[in-house]
Length: 537
Image (cartoon, rainbow, N blue to C red; front, top):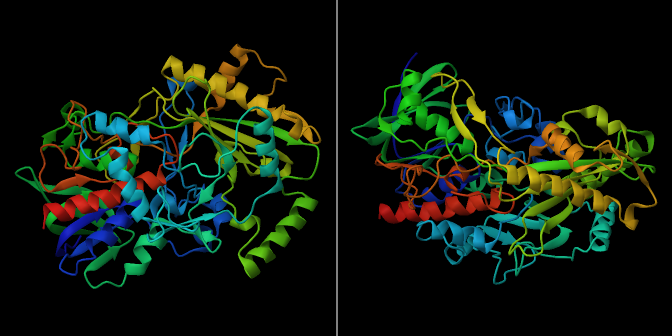
């Protein structure tokens, strides 16, 4: 293998939601030489730009890491699928594009843990500065940022039915989940522009990709972070079977996500000493918390057949609708091909005494199973309702399968391991079944597909949850921010004990936020960029 040496001021590992923002902000000063490394390819494909293309990205080896967990003891030893974006834009290029932030108390909780500058009043300006809200600017929204936030252009009729059923079940409407309050049901806003996906790459990277001081290298797999005397000095990566070395004069910034960031730290000798020695990796820094504290939104989905041809399905009437939608997309960028799949839903409380919603509803006008990978379900007219637990108590971990950087990380989600989470998910199923039982669905309610029982007992629901519960692609926490024994970075996102190295992505969240994690990750990167630039001014 040949080796090339190139020097930069900043090297960013990972071209996902955080990496794209960092590349944009750090390269805004022409004096900064910035390099962005991404394992996956460019995002220039209709599968990404066309919102409905997400169905083809769920099992695409080219654009998706397609990770799997270890067998999960708390879920009857099931292996859980863990898709993540492996492409410029990262998971923002393969997600459902929902724009939600969580609640103010989520961030005030981070600050209460000793993370100065991460309370809601501190981070709201970064949500606003990165956002172009098509509704216009307000106390909670900005319209001068790069990330376009828009109304959905599809609005499938069954979505309205879902909202009517929610109203009948006692849930109130909310037109802005990121405004005065989060609680309520309604239509989700999406990260789209003119009916196309607005990923972090499209918003932050493509407009600045021609900057002379910004180098973007795709299909480059980082093998390890280079250190000397506890100072990060560069990275080693592989591209086209050639090994290369890059030097960083100011910082190496790790933005590879909640699964790959801890994996890469450990491969570089930074992590729990016993685990590193077990894999024969020389210990650079014994940092016990690397890979610990993994959190994920636990999700359960209930599915019903429809007695009418009013859902999305690969059946004659459904196919005719799809042909119409293809024309609508080509001619007007409207119709179901612009859908986020999840158009309606909201945030609810399972108990009225809770301060904030603890569950999130996401409705899909088709039959859903196994992350949409079981395509035979599309032959049936039906509808599905996700209900996920926003602040689970269960904790998992990420570690190494071996010392080979080309291997997947070892993922133990450990969902449902806390008894309170299992009890909450039983309640989530009951909430879903109650919504489906409302008069709004009376004209076409068919047989229940999941759960199979018409009136399941608590014990039957509990077993259903263990056999079917999954997640909604929001892993966080594995390089958590803080100063306790499990903290990996401080509140300036610097790795404890290693100079010139930061982690900037969802892995730094000490606790999960109550909502989708893409917008919060973009916020984290924008704030981190300001911190980094201030440290080197």
